[in-house]
Length: 259
Ligand code: 13P
Image 1: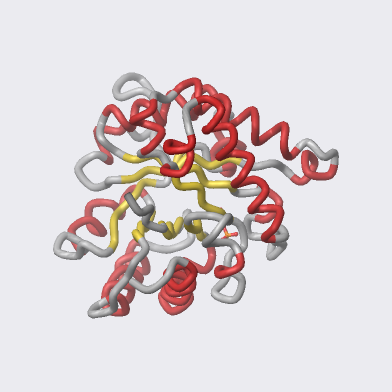
Image 2: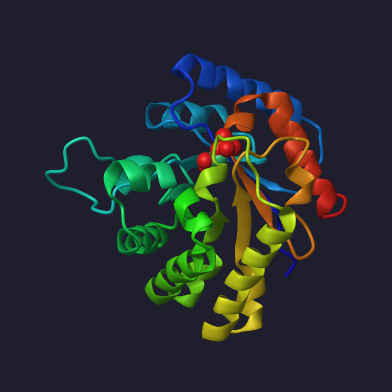
């Protein structure tokens, strides 16, 4: 089975509800009649999920994801959002974005349990991993990635792993305009695939999609995908601009051959 590239837009908390609706309308129009090879996912803010899902009802080209979800389904958890709340509207959810890990004390253990819980609801997790600036400087990148991937491998069964997207987002590259050398990203992708092969087999390792995120632009998008590099991209800032997002999708598509 040929792997489909995936492009994910994480809108974070950047736009008003009205602006999110305008953005999805613009994206829909832009994609109309254009053959797209990549799977495209947008992750709006929680309150916009129902309206965005409704706006995309007849559009099979764009899927909806949540930006996060709480591990527990129900209970006295003030301010948290349950999988049951997002389930009617999404096929995807980000898990363990570094901004969530930092703000909410989310650990690798919580991340993997949340990913497993999502699979139980038939929602595909996009699990974010990556090293901090400090870890990069002290040459801890490989150790950090290995640890995060080991925890995923331990906590997810084969079927769940295949449905999971692993997003490598070096924390220092997020929103900073600083980007890693594409060869370094290819090395990380290889490292993750080796770990998956060691635990399972090459077939599984090749099927799991590993994507890159951090200061992706239309100009640099093509450097990080295709061949030994990533299977797609996770985009913050540039995903808020329909034209830029579209150009990134096209860059990914062309790295993977024609649609
Ligand atoms: P930027 O593309 O704005 O650097 O954000 C990356 C990110 O955090 C996506 O989840």
